[in-house]
Length: 81
Image 1 (cartoon, helix red, strand yellow):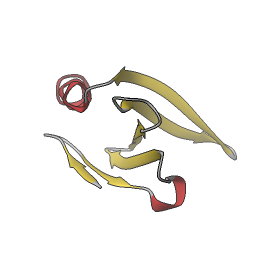
Image 2 (cartoon, one colour):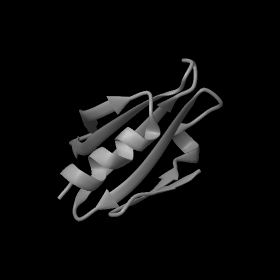
Image 3 (cartoon, helix red, strand yellow):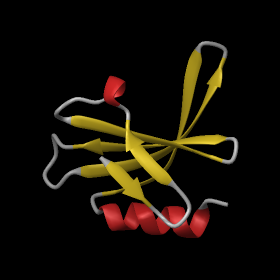
Image 4 (cartoon, helix red, strand yellow):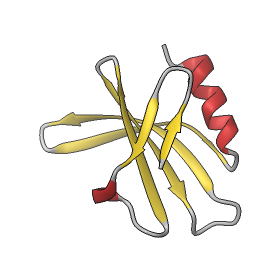
């Protein structure tokens, strides 16, 4: 899946996705962002994370979550600088 916002293009990470959970990743500036789509819930649930590495650990900061994808896109367009 490819998801485009005004500022970013997210692409499915095939290594970190399956039929129930899909992770879309992008880099913007020097930051990495991930949208997690949880399809085990009805309707699907979307979460936006800012990610970074500290040594071998991947740290996630959840920025926004919604059951509507358009709310995630609106948040990105208005709040990510």
